[in-house]
Image 1: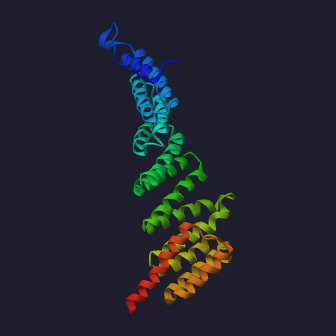
Image 2 (image 1 turned 120 degrees about the vertical axis):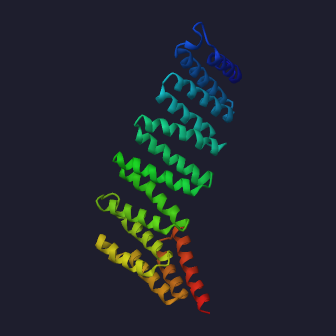
Image 3 (image 1 turned 90 degrees about the horizontal axis):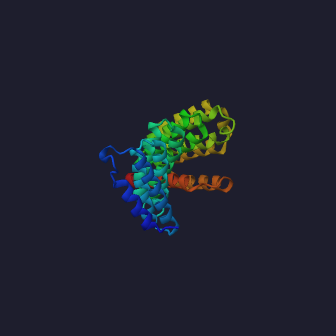
Length: 288
């Protein structure tokens, strides 16, 4: 097997040669160059030179575009993304966006949704760009929903809600949690999670320091799902609202502790509850 550099040189030569017909050479030259670039890129992967593999896959995709093989080019950009993924998330995001453009142009929205979610994860976990992460998750959710993949859409929208809340954009978080809750009403498989979505939305109302809106929301959630009335989540929301109104940090802490003994609070809920607790302390400080 030829080494990666030799294959790359061969591909470059094919890509830049004009042939007997000069500028009017047929697209077959680009197809052949694209195949050679893919062979070279795979050779780079074998020797674990992922940066060179990514760049070479990009060259292959460019050749495929010149021969109007857009589906193949989209797939090749995905290979470039996979090469860059662990070593250069910025480059991974860049080529993934190029693949997504081609997927959507070709009407392949289900594939686009899956990779849009990958892009969102890159923004969230690797690039620390939460605004772009939220927008990408949101759009992935829309594409999944349009393809009747509601469970995948809900998963993406819940990520929007959770990130928005962590960024203190409680209005957006509440809207997304409530959106997913309403969708889940008609889905027997998702309905069991409904109380969790309503609980998170209620916490966001309280964290937003709007107790009147929080009380109204809790009442509306019972109207939306009467079974919510008898849940520990419903009771805790009312207990937290009462503790905030009374400025009672000790009662707040006791109620959270009691709840956590039966239903372990995850990191997201703990973060929001800690903010609420701190807001009680701030109110006390302001009074003093």
